[in-house]
Length: 605
Ligand code: GCB
Image 1 (cartoon, rainbow, N blue to C red):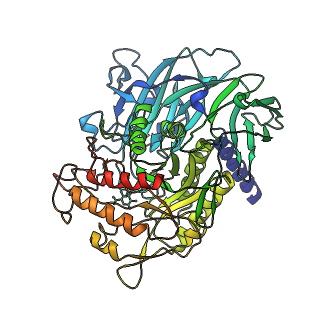
Image 2 (image 1 turned 180 degrees about the vertical axis):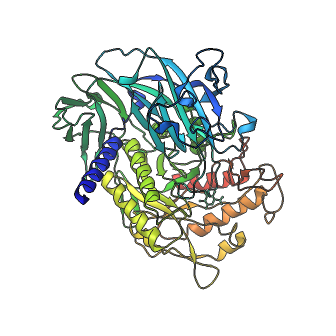
Image 3 (image 1 turned 60 degrees about the horizontal axis):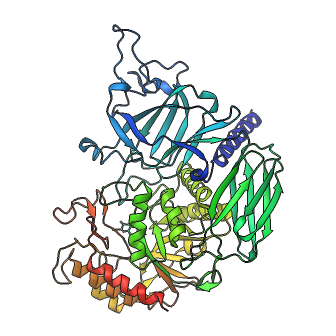
């Protein structure tokens, strides 16, 4: 009995592993059809479309009734009772959070159903078709033509389903979306950002040949910058076709033979121009199979630490960063497009940054692609934030899955130099174990990048002594910490007396500091929420932090004011966290120019 149980578990585990690795990367450069646009929607706080009145879930029934919203049904005649009608329901924009499209949804947390009808004809009979979601916050169930494709948990990572055999001439995709915050979730119930619900990123149909390259890792060997190393994998584990990888600009063409759907790659690539913020060189990389050619734009660079130094292509680099939430303040809501990414990263560039911390969850593909093009190094992060359930195995599994999905998606991004495991998590044995396991997963999935996590500062014997001591510092390459001296801890004057102890021979990075300021509110520098207070805190913080011997960068909190239900002070906050250097109408605050001057000076050193 025990054996049967273990075998069943093994099969289940393998199934979930292979589902994980089947995620198609580089979606942007595949043969795709967008399903973005107007979708029908139904607000369903009582989940009437999912359960009958005995609370039995329709999606677990062998023959779900027409009352299930995913059956997308119509009454047979005028006598039949059916209490929904997709065709007469209102429409909503996808991608986009629901909160800021309709006034009555601003604070809504719960279930909303979406429906899109589409026609699709494959270009080759033998091709396959996948339905791909860039992200849905937080939990979703997806149905096509009344059949359940699957479920997904986690608000910021992509997922897909193969729909080849379910396609009809006219199709109905129905998505159940629920954004209830959950204590055991990742993130948990308590965050300092807005819980935007909905299909927040692109929805895409991907058409592929029957056998195709679904994944590849094409990066520079960190030990030898004249060697490109990695692997290619096919969708089928028995594929044995040839794959030609070429970089026409440097005249490189190499062929590998897949065995059991996979091949390692390793070839010499001399005369590469290395990617850096000063020269964000991307090469066109072609991956040719007997069935198709996939193109990607990939940069090549090395990133390492050596004692306290961060070395980009072997050269010392100071990370002139800024933290960013994925929000467009002008439209108010989740950033979702190329234009939104241009706005945010354009501001970061103007500020003099060479680095951005994309907090506190994986940001969308537009941000990552654009950072590569613009020459901004990137910190990517998973929403292991504050007090999540360290001892709950499901919470751990969820966090691990999100981390793996993030690395899987971004692993060919030259701009991405750091995976961050967590933000401001309280030290305990269970948390240390949880994050240690995550660090091992990240190193296994991607040995080429640096690991970090935003830690906290602890006070020493006197109020001016600050110590970074955290077991987590031993697992990461960069010792990062958030500090709010002068805002949550004392007044800015305290910074002038600060003494820092960081007992690790590693680079130190200040992942956050900051103060709230309402754009346009002027007063003396001791008045909370005035631009003067924020500016004074920036001046004093920069002076204080630059005394830390191992300091190799910072990403102050934060580029732009962002929405947060925790921020209740009327007239000043009104639901916005005001620590932005830029206000929600795009106004640059005084502190913006202080940081800009510091970065401009750093850039010349
Ligand atoms: C922090 C958190 C960040 C908050 C920020 C604040 O330490 O990491 O998510 O938004 O402080 O403004 O308090």
